[in-house]
Length: 530
Image 1: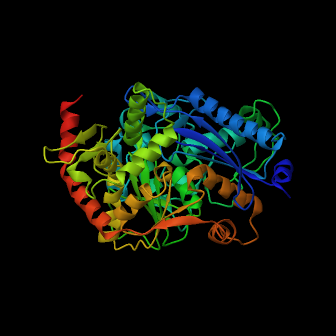
Image 2 (image 1 turned 45 degrees about the vertical axis):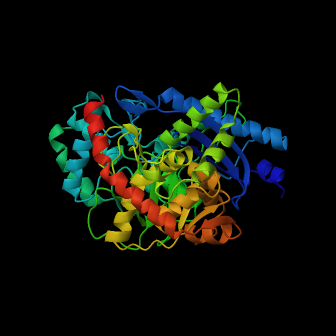
Image 3 (image 1 turned 180 degrees about the horizontal axis):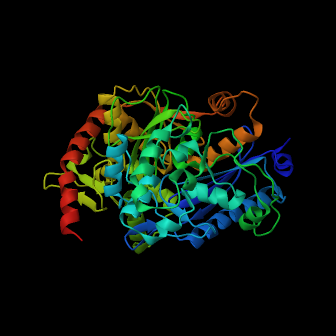
């Protein structure tokens, strides 16, 4: 069948991902070829010291994104989108979405960006002897308990954003194991929440006298390939205002952006790894065994099929870098030149290649919010130089590109130097890699390993969740996700590989010494710049 016939017959898979700055929908065939995309741009808000998105904003953004896709299908193929073979929902990992028995929101949605859970995360890490990052759902839940917030006693459902949207469309309170591993520790043998730790947590909060048990609040854990429910008539009407989308479409388990990033880069088998570089930056290395000890800088999560995965997650990536590019755009307008944003990024990123390997002595921190890896709990953005620094545009852009990878490199160094994890190849995806040969080159220098960027890298996690939906719809009996990706999705996929250059590696190492030494400046900024 041609593309039009595939869409008409529903032999397709739809993925929708609610990212930090964009909601994106991708319609693919069962080989992963992109048939149409839709987008909706948005930004988080900082309300009462909480990074959040309003509930109506979430709902409207989801509908607008689907509308964008539907209109694209109508424009390109002259047909109405009525059905697909499967649908998948993805969103920012972690965070806290709390509902009562009637499905009403009880507290503001807390995103991964919030670092207001230090007390809870520290206590739970000590209790479990397992690292509980500040942004994990159980840390948010326990902090709400410690703060004696009155909504806690009314809780009926606690989930991530992907789990909430999935419930809204299917009525099922389930979650993919990768996203679940950002809620509560997972036992990869049982592919469920760790029972021992769940008992410990319930015993810890028993004194508060809540009527619920934690496992009753959290969604059921599912793995890739399992059906996670079907689109209800109410869900179809909610998503598609025209009423043309048919109910009954099966859903794959909802996943977080880390899991969809692994699927989008064919990094789900032990020994593989990927780096997603955008608003936040995180590196995922799939392990053959657990780490030898607890590290507060490293999250232990899972792949969409449940393999243990070490995650170096930096809350801050390209937000400050993007702000500087926008500033240069304003200057261009002041000079009477209207530059496209894509052109600005390409010109400025490419200019950085002329900079010195160590950024000429410049230093920057893009800490738009707190950063868990460096144990800094509030955001302060900084650019610093000494009288001896070589201050020019190339070095300025290079240092901001370097620093977007700074925190995540600290986590990766723990894995490679202390745990002796071998990184033979890294797959890159996300906005940092849109300008060819720049972000990819700097990441190769940071990890000192070849970095491959596939042709589909710009489609990101929305494409990854679409592929997971395609796996549900079209997998063969006994076919694993690892085999499906390797043999059927990536078999003919092309991309570019960048091998690290010795001078770049040494330059990045010099920058990192400056980066680590300057963290005291960030801490002082928090104390003195309110």
